[in-house]
Amino acid sequence: QGQLVESGGGLVQAGGSLRLSCAVSGRIDSSYTIGWFRQAPGKEREFVAAITWSGGGGTYYANSMKGRFTISRDNAKNTVFLQMNTLSPADTAVYYCAASRYYGSTYSSQYTYWGQGTQVTVSS
Image (cartoon, rainbow, N blue to C red):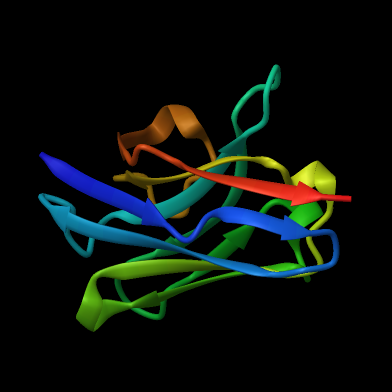
């Protein structure tokens, strides 16, 4: 089994920043893509960003996140980060990291392993 553990969520004011972390372990090796998704109350889970674990570490973003969110990784610590800037109340959601065998996948259905999620709340 693969394990992913998110941390770093919390309450922040509009315009502020947060950095989420995703600790990866178990059977998730360098062939996996690690992605971030989010789900707001009453809404479907949506893709945020993804990064390939091997090679040059290709990155992928939802259009609405480009320029505000940055995904990165620390291979030595088996950790993936999501830096979120200029947050707005619309970014309030539970944020999940997940692992997929599909290279650069942006589809939640293609992700096999999921973390438990971390709550991000942005106040106006």
